[in-house]
Image (cartoon, rainbow, N blue to C red; front, side):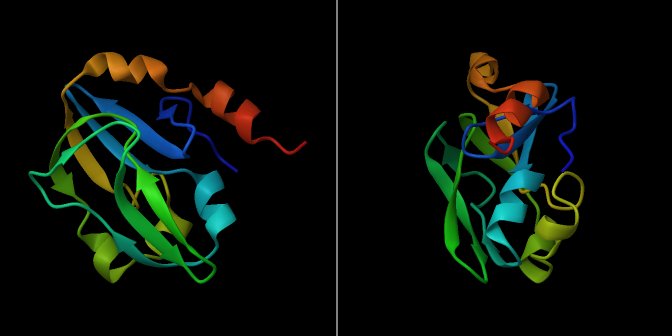
Amino acid sequence: MSTPKELRFSEEHEWVKVEGERVRVGITDFAQHELGDIVFVELPEVGDEISADEPFGSVESVKTVSELYAPVSGKVVEVNEDLGDSPEFVNESPYEKAWMIVVELSDSSELDKLMTAEQYEEMTKED
């Protein structure tokens, strides 16, 4: 499984790509692999405020429904509408096509709490 080195990661398996004062958020390759085939993605609306470590949406697979937890706090400024019609993007391309939301950060220091790719790989490696 791939873990892009330029991203940061949460313990809840979300990835964060820093883009200036904004971040792009999605779920990791590890998470989509564990969930199985994604059939539905529920995301917040543009303008919604999200809080770090609180649910902001969900993904439904053939196996289960899982909450998505915000890795940072801020205002949702963009939502990936393509996932409504093509939830399979989460399985096919978790780091490119399947980004979920773009958030304008309210506290950039929250980024310091996220893991590097190496730390995330360590957390998710097979025992």
